[in-house]
Amino acid sequence: MHRFHNYVINLFILLILLSGKVVLSQSQIIDSEKNFNLNVKQFNEFIDRFNYKTDFNGNPVDSVFKSKITRAKYLDLLFNKDDVRLKNADSEYIDLKNEFIKHVVDRNLLINKYSLKIIAEAKSNVKYKNNSKEISIYLNQEIESNGVKWVLLSVKADFLDVLSEDTVLLRFIPPTSNETNFISLKRVFDDSTYQHYYAYHNYSYDPLSSFLFALNTGLVKYQYVNEIVYHIIVIDGWHIQVKEFNRNTDNSGWLINNIVKTNLDPNECFEQIINN
Image 1 (cartoon, rainbow, N blue to C red):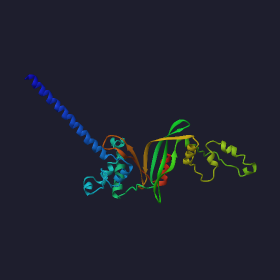
Image 2 (cartoon, rainbow, N blue to C red):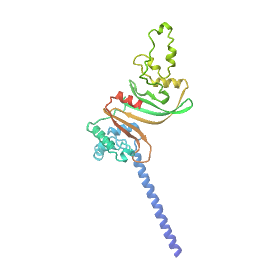
Image 3 (spheres, helix red, strand yellow):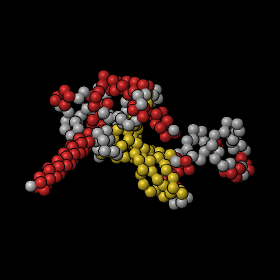
Image 4 (cartoon, rainbow, N blue to C red):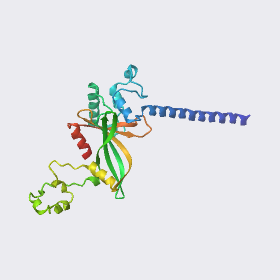
């Protein structure tokens, strides 16, 4: 009888332990489903949420959803909560974030997903002279009569930064050089990293053309994309950076990683982006 009593107690304890595991498993499933729904899985989904167009499940935002979550709150959820400036209560950045949200909500500002002012920065790996290098390739969308496509805008790489600045020496090809069969060209092309000073007025070095040349001559071999960062300069006075955060939390996917208030126009802002 005593042995049977112990057996019943042990069985009861085992059932409690098993039920605890089941409850834990169900809790994990619920958390996983919640995280999946809150996860911003694609960049286009980020834009739809930013525009207050779709809810967590991709359904159109309706009056019921609006009664529960305001646009300001929805925008706040699109920020990377693991940003140390937010976690450490950096008042300056938090004030900037709140100012940005208010600016967007008060003016009902939207992002056109096909805007030319959305720039994708594809941080990529290449082989240059058999050495691995990280470069940034900048793209935006181009609208044609039959649709939209992404196009190459520019490339940033240390091995493409080949020009030097010099404000001391005056470099030029003398006006009488033609009478000496342009013998001075030897000096011009030996003037390493300064040859651009001998080019025509308003000459601008084009890293993209240099990169394409390097690819087609085998000097550079493209490998793969490491990371994508979107630079959104659609909203006047603001530069928004969006990147993907892969983590098992309710704040994951494509999120705002940084916002900058700027007085630059979109073209100047783009120049600043690629030259930083």
